Length: 432
Image 1 (tube, helix red, strand yellow):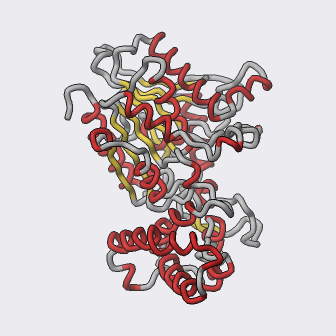
Image 2 (tube, rainbow, N blue to C red):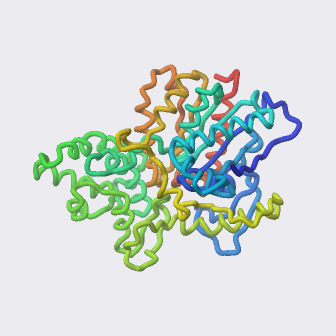
Image 3 (spheres, rainbow, N blue to C red):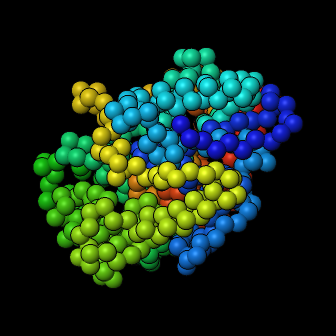
């Protein structure tokens, strides 16, 4: 497995924190956290996180975590320069279980070879990286390795909260508060809802968890009057047309929202970050997987990291650095477990790690404009870990005026660093 480690020489290993960090996908290298959030250098974007003009630039990262912790950036097998010995072996690691075991073994080997068994240990995962982090924490807890803290950025632990279908209405409920925040950003809400967004958000969260959830649970038993009431309120909270909501049977998935919020402008909003907009590349607003967010950030990160790796870090290789392995089949062939096991879920592994280690702290970070892992779904997941108050007090939360990759927005990146430092200090021995 390929990794880049940043360590401060001459330090007492028992006092110097060590953070293992990775992105998700599954099928994504860890270049995003590496060059956007944690490392010594960062990709220069516009302050809001939007795409700059080429050629793309690199700058010192004023919000790097290196002043507080050593950092090991790890690429999953099949991404970056990480490769299995042969294509057949990739299948072993391209799945929930195999991926967790691979990262768990990597961490064990790293702290063994570099004499870091005595160091305060931290995990930081983003997106599917949170699925992995939770699983790794549980896996290593059974192998005698405990962490001081785990940071879950844009969490995807309980996939029942994220994968909608005809038998699972829960994601529809948990998405609406994010729809509201994105609609507000694009000024698609009524004026009274725009005056105090914090109050509006709380109002929407209350509504979806009561009236809206109840309406969906009634299914065809919903009366015409009840149905119309939901349609009216849903339109008010999302900026979408009443006809669209009616035609969708009150259930608006992410694709319908991103395609239709700015339909009058022939624009699509981003899935990873609803602040981003762009016309459909095929001109028909019908390209299923197009996301303006990815189109804006992929070129700068690709160019800058490849140059940084080969020039400043001096790592030479003719191999392609695979930022995404989706095209190699990593995502399509991913083993999510058998259908009889239900939705993929590593929240149970996180709970196991928490209850086995009463000192373990967990920080959840979410962006208000993230449709891939909505902030209200994160709250729901963490509220359903079945923890008593003595353990629940070890959970903390931070939200940002950004999207899935909260750090691409300048102010959110600074806040993220501050939140991480506070969290790490509370997670170290001798701290309350």
